[in-house]
Image (cartoon, rainbow, N blue to C red; front, side, top):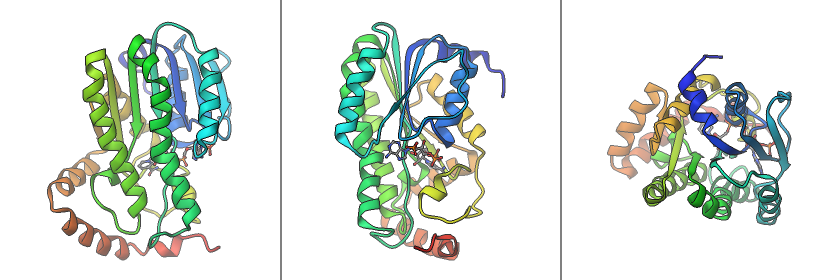
Amino acid sequence: MPKNKTIERYLQDFSCIIITGASSGIGRELLSRIEYSGTAASVFNLSRTPPETISKALKFTHLNCDLSQPAHIESVVAELKKLMPSTGRILLVNNSGFGAYGEFPAPGIDHTLRMVDVNTRAPVHLTALLWNDIKTRGGQVVNVASLAGYQPTPLMATYAATKAFLLNWSIALDAEGRAFGVSCVAICPGPVSTNFSKAAGFESSTGLGGQTVQACVEESLQAMMRQRPQIITGWKNRLLGFFSARLPKPFVAKIGLRMIRRLKLDRFVKKS
Ligand SMILES: NC(=O)c1ccc[n+]([C@@H]2O[C@H](COP(=O)([O-])OP(=O)(O)OC[C@H]3O[C@@H](n4cnc5c(N)ncnc54)[C@H](OP(=O)(O)O)[C@@H]3O)[C@@H](O)[C@H]2O)c1
């Protein structure tokens, strides 16, 4: 793990760190970096399964929560408020999320609606319930969006739209929050090797390659430390995001459809 004193100091500046989806992938790597920083903060993970092998030195609590269920969010935040320290800066990372591939509404209406709930409704709900505490005590809200949020993406239409929502919401919240000393950062990765493709309905890796989870989280932490409202991780992704955000959306969607079809991703889709 890279030794980075500035990132360690940035992480040590919070008394309470709340992260969703630290059981796997990007969230788990971020939790490792938090562990490694030697922070004295109380750290909470909200997801359906607990992360494995957490260092005993970390003040860590896993709170079981299915973020597609608003009632779970309400009760988990009530519990969280009893457990979290009452002073000091708060870092909230809305990371949980998943994708879907195929012609709308594939892979199914239930999957699609749960995805909308976990990717958009849950971050808004969770942030709203904690917003007063964050505003009063100072802190940061981080939203893991996606490069897909920069353009309409056929065959991933709903997933990309949830991430466009998260990206725009996050940037607007950052503008509002600055008056209270609160920053928001939208992290926008391109493909990263995690369990993401499995959760999106693929049987095996799609072979699209992409960033390692370590590289993605390192860039994300740099952006969080610098309070950048948005970051696309990986230079190739930044180039893609730069151009696609400047071209007419219907044109980008047509080209995108052709390019995605050419990748023949259907061969990786789990047969039900
Ligand atoms: N990997 C990529 O290529 C990529 C690219 C761009 C953006 N992203 C975004 O990065 C974020 C993290 O994804 P990842 O790549 O790390 O994938 P991952 O390895 O599949 O991790 C997803 C995390 O989300 C949590 N989650 C899923 N459904 C949940 C629910 N109903 N309630 C609570 N937590 C839930 C999972 O926890 P449990 O299963 O334990 O609940 C898991 O910890 C997502 O928002 C994703 O959209 C990923």
